[in-house]
Image (cartoon, rainbow, N blue to C red; front, side, top):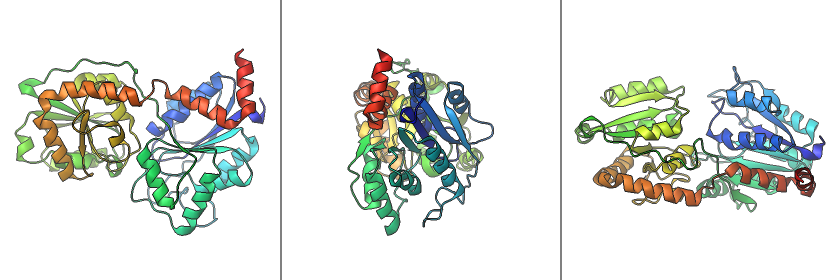
Length: 395
């Protein structure tokens, strides 16, 4: 296999061995391998390696493992205010230089990939794209860094974002338009045709709310939700909240629920791989995020015909029509979320119909096979030689 046929994926690490931000690149890597291309992937060497990483290796993806140097307080990717580079940057540069790929894909779970890596490719005329899965207002770049990003992103063959809101925020943060940007969709962990029955109400007419996502309140806002459900008004209503997901903050969230007097109403159900089973048992998704991209949990709930009550951050408003397919809170605060929950409660008799509208709408916005679409885009961006070689191989 020649260098002209090799793709390199660089998964920028966060605290999780595998998250929703890994689904697109991981499945696309497998698709490219199945079509005869050579694929390398630079990933963090979490111990043990996540099963999805091992799956990549089993199917022929060459793994380049980086030491697990992640720190909550001192992230080695981010200590780059000057041209001084951390060890992770050098590890990735070594891989890219050694393999000279047809295309390098920098997959960033947050805003923008480290600018040093983009400059490394640009200076050596190595083709690359970026994929950004989330962003937040708290991110801001000093003038020199913003200028470097404007130049480096312009050198990319494409800058992919999962929502228009994330793209516009990134443009504001670097002080300039990203002219080569494009919106891309993530694959879901459920059948595109999923249609679980609407569950009956529980004992004494109990509504079952679900909050789905990693237990990381600084992003996912579970604390906001718990506060919004506190008080005599909600105490008098029949409901139960099932929180799905795991993470380092589970115990502190359990303590918070108990402290707010909600221990008897809130169930920490852990991580579930069966999404359809979640929606066979629950009526509404509550998504109190402080920042996002376009979360899989929202898309999957809508595919399953469930209304969503969410904060108006990132891509939520791009797929949820307030009062029609769900309800949007003006801001990620307990007061705003409480107001949105009240609007849902007033119209709870329409919940099943709202869920059906959500199921119809989301299928107009999200294609059934985002991986195939993304894989085709990457092959075209890699250049005519790769596209031509694939066409010959398929004859």
